[in-house]
Image 1 (cartoon, rainbow, N blue to C red):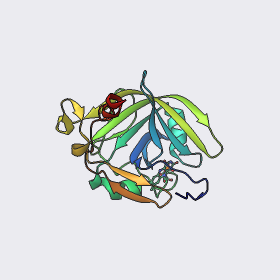
Image 2: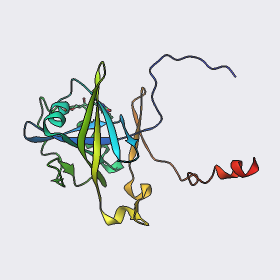
Image 3: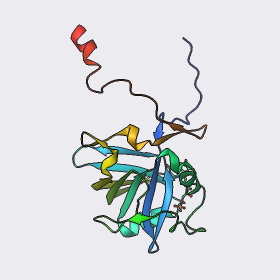
Length: 188
Ligand SMILES: Cc1cc2nc3c(=O)[nH]c(=O)nc-3n(C[C@H](O)[C@H](O)[C@H](O)COP(=O)(O)O)c2cc1C
């Protein structure tokens, strides 16, 4: 086996595609975000990594809140569009029908799942800011649940790969996590 070093532009595969929302200059604004992950178990904390040049950053800092909305595959064009144009130049406040939860942060009705976050901390990196948000609520319609849990098949989200910059749908179910590995454990 020979592995080659392809440089340092490393990414995880795949990345979840999300839409981050916040009030900026008193107006709802949205941007596409693939650099997002849950980072703390209890309390539940989510992290999003956003380039310092974007318009959304200012709104998150000022309003101390943001939302992470999970679009489904039918929303692929809108998701890409809000990742191409900036709220600095184009008003993105009327693209989606919105709703509000516990915080005054905009969430997208059409997205099957919405995570409402209160800003905990901002970590400044050379080009990006990591926004750490305490999850205050998660919103979902009952039709997207199976056994009271969000069902990925019903949500029908999509994913992103970089640096080739492509969107992908989610594949098939492979096995139960925290269970399938027990076969090896039992053998040893
Ligand atoms: C598929 C896709 C994924 C993106 N992911 C991120 C990301 O994770 N972090 C980031 O800073 N920008 C990301 N962007 C770029 C922003 O969404 C884009 O620059 C957007 O216009 C910023 O909006 P704003 O200036 O209104 O805040 C992504 C764009 C696309 C198309």
